Image 1 (cartoon, rainbow, N blue to C red):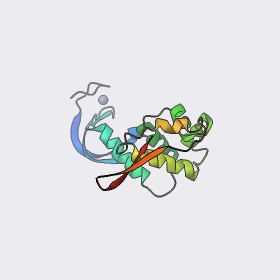
Image 2 (cartoon, protein in one colour):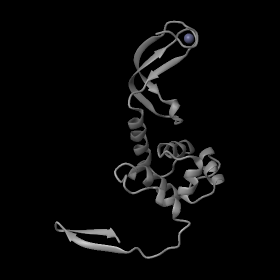
Image 3 (cartoon, rainbow, N blue to C red):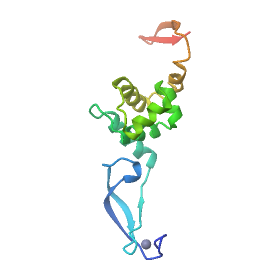
Image 4 (cartoon, protein in one colour):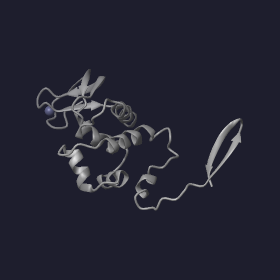
Length: 161
Ligand SMILES: [Zn+2]
């Protein structure tokens, strides 16, 4: 293939690729196909199944030891498909707080960090539990949940009534 920048032929090889496009400084994609131009330095990586890749990265970040970096916070937020405003609404903080988390001028508190991790980890398996619920939490008055709980097939099953 030809370099889209300068037209020079590009060389394609499998390599361990530093995935800087993710915004994360330390993610290496092992053995992926990368075309490089020796003339101008342009490169193109073939990254298969990007969505699943991002989920795999996000899950690992959500399970890491306490303390998320600003880049990790931004990555998780984007993986959740949230704009900055969505993020602020879900976390119950101001837009300014979100920008401070993401530019590194403020550290995320531990409750917010736990919520972001939980949202990331439960996003797929609990798809029926809409994260939209979190947005409304600050706006609604608390009221006791009405439940109907019954034994079905030998197990307790609770349902909102
Ligand atoms: Zn080139």
